[in-house]
Length: 138
Image (cartoon, rainbow, N blue to C red; front, side):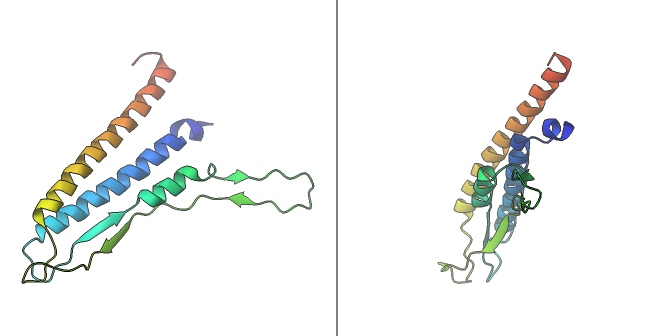
């Protein structure tokens, strides 16, 4: 019972999204730190498709109903959530073969910061609602 309250589906999705946004911030910071490193190739983080898949899966541990003891019981487990880091080996417009564009990376960092702040605010609101339900006051 407490697992449903303290580890709800909404909280899991928000925590997974926060993990992905945090990793993306670290990767972007690494790209910015290596803007002048010769032959450095920038990296990106993908997790939105996994998050979307996680949202559309049945609840964790959903079991099928069996009407006969000889039926095979199947428990559907959701896929694990693990953001993927991949290296972008596209063309470089610089003589040192570095493909990091500082303006693009700073824009991505700003976008990711806004996304991270929105997610953390949503998770904070979830916890406030839980606290209000338990104590009766915010």
